[in-house]
Figure 1 (cartoon, rainbow, N blue to C red):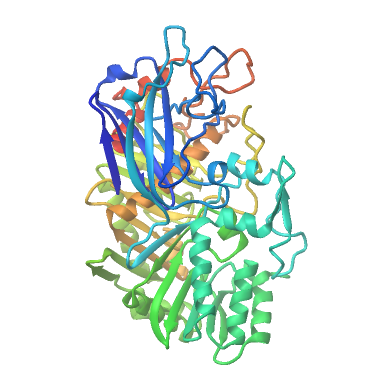
Figure 2: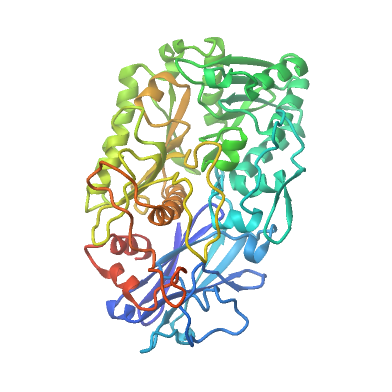
Length: 602
């Protein structure tokens, strides 16, 4: 959902509601209003809390600018944002660890340069305010959660330093997460648990809230589908439930999970030692992987709710990767997942699952208080797998407004979806924004002066940003982009999201245990869209500041020109623009920035 407001001169602000975050987008009705535009100052007022200006990592070149007394140099009061939208995630800088959720008022003021390229004072007559609820996304029957990820970011570096550990050297399966893991540049120390809470964000909160609920109610039991399994506090809870006879676990046993000293083997051994009947564990891999990530919850042996998504129950999955979870608080949905788990159990987690009724037709759900949904369970027969992926491909190609996505690897796996995601960027009529750890032949970036979309790589490696940015901790321990979701036409009544544990590839749909979820709902699509935009923006900037990549792809380019030039007098420091050239492209009909402004701001 979104809320919007405007003033008499035609300046408007639209606030899009995400999962514990808000995108604020701006627009002018007259192109002349961007003449000498310096950017936007954003003042935030959580209801009943002290208000504050959002901060900008970049500042204006030195000069006698009109400054707001008492505000930092990089406050947007003095360093306005030079974009027509900004994503706000309440947190560390202004609220510390005690993030407030509730009504927020965002007041946005356009800022201008004078004839000498100096910032003029704030003119509050130009300001526009919008009110919106900020908090974790939840409806009566569906909740969403996302990991924060972004270990390679200024936020992580400023908070924890760039030498933070994510687990102790030589660790055992279960260790004390209260031990010190990091020391930042100010000498402040942090525990593993503090890192985990920050990086795991709302996904971790959903997972542990559910586990704590089970621990405190002995009428509840749980079935667990797991692929990677090594998060220490989570494993400790599962082992406690085993000792109480209230859990069954299907755990992948592909080669990567049975190699010497694997945490999955260690978990199996400890589970069997602790288990009290009827607790039980079963190892298997279907045709290739038992790739589901699920909790099915029962109350007095009746299915109650289910948590699933792309998030592995591991340190990497919850704290390094970008991932999502979905909690269905619907006994009807939970009953289908329970039946699928039971079928996998009695078939010994083998390929024979694809001959069961659960591997065939989609399961459709529609209630007045929940979004329209369809869920499929793999491994499928080959023709069914191809049909499912063809339907997604056709929906991508039929999109009229936008296609946004975050998919782990679109260069392998086979099937029609990945080529469609790569090719959508050539469509000048659809706004496309996507990210993948492996986008194919080279990393595709937006080319200035062109309306083709953005497809970036989510693992740029050791990018070193110029000052004033600090050296960041490089991505480690696997993928940054582990998500598997596609959003089509998020801002229309035809909005749809494809998500879940499926890699959206033919190989996985035919050989992995997975669930693929289609949700037809505008609010849900908006939440996923904001996650995609955050990832693309983050890595687009880093890729643009990395050395040019060797590639054979003729359409590959070094990056968009949203990165301001290195400016005098400190010619090694990155500054904001001191002119309106950054703003003009947002009104150039042949430029993707214009499409961006129209999509999010109008």
